[in-house]
Structures are given as structure tokens and as C-alpha cells.
Image (cartoon, helix red, strand yellow):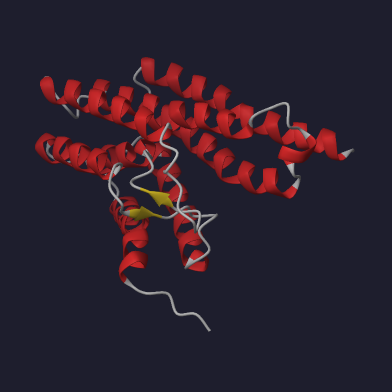
Length: 231
């Protein structure tokens, strides 16, 4: 297999995320939330793998006819923002005006964030919350908090997209990666488990999702506070 073929294959692998997004959307339209999130978890795994593959096989060099960054952003907006926002709106977790407020804040704020050229930091983290609403909405599905708590968290997290707060990329942020990457994998496992049991209350899943989510939410901020020691 030539370098060009391998690079194109990586782009095709990334593009499967669009298929999983459609499958998730079809499930969401039918209010099959567990099936929707299982497809989103699959898309999440693809998104975690395709970046290292793209760098490994030098897609920019051997398959420059496709814009991998644009391809990734299109799929990320569908799977991280659009479908989770729809699910939150239709799930009944946010009644009346709170649901409308949330989908407007999430979709409008996120598309502006995705277009912001300042979204990446020098250590490959994100400047501001990286619009990972698939993770946020899953936590709402698992914990089912009071709707006032939910809508308040939506507004706060949306505002955090446009702050100088740092949020790590589990794969590309090198600092504390030996801890962060396993935590991200654990979150994915708990997310899949929760969807598999149709979001039925489960103390282990609820604790696992809560702990791993809090770590991923605040570890970047902790890195800003705690100075990095260099030899």
C-alpha cells in the first residue's frame, strides 16, 4: 500500500463519522436516546483515532486534495453540537423556554467557536470550552438534574467557550497525558455503558461519569494554575 493510498484511507476513515452522525440523528428523531448515544460514542472513538493516524501517515503531504481539518470540523459540529442539542431539546429535560434557550445558545455559540482561529493553544489544548456538548448532554441524561440546574450549566459552559480558560485535548495535550488519556477512555466506557442500559440509574455509572467528567472539565484549568516544572 502506497503512502498516498494510506493517507486517503485515513480521510475515508474520518468521513465515516458523518455516517455515524446520521445514524445517531435517525435514532434521536425516534427518541431512541440510548441508540443515539451508542452511535455518538462510536463517532467519538473515530474522532480520537483519526488524528494520530493522520499525523502518522502524513495526510497533508500525501493526500492534500482533501482538507482533513475541515472534514473533522464538519463531523465534530454534527456529533458534538447539533445532535446533542437536538436530543437535549426533545428529551424533556428542559421544558418550555429553557429548551429553546439552550438549543439557541449551544448551536449559535458553538458555530462561532468552531470558526475561531484562536481555539487552539500552543500545547495543543483548547482556549475556552471546546463545544463538546455530546459529553455535557450525556451527563445530563445520566444524572437527570433539576431543569434549573441544567439550563444554568448550559449557559455557564457556553460562556466558557469564549474565555481564556484552558481545556485539554486528551490525546494531543502532552502534560499529564498518562492520566488524562486513561480518564478519557474511562469516560467513553462509562458513556457507552450508560447508553447500553438505556440511562437507567446505576450508582457505578453515575459516579464514573461524574468523576471523569469533572476531571476532564477542570484539568486544563488546573494546569494553568499549577506551574509546569522543567528540568
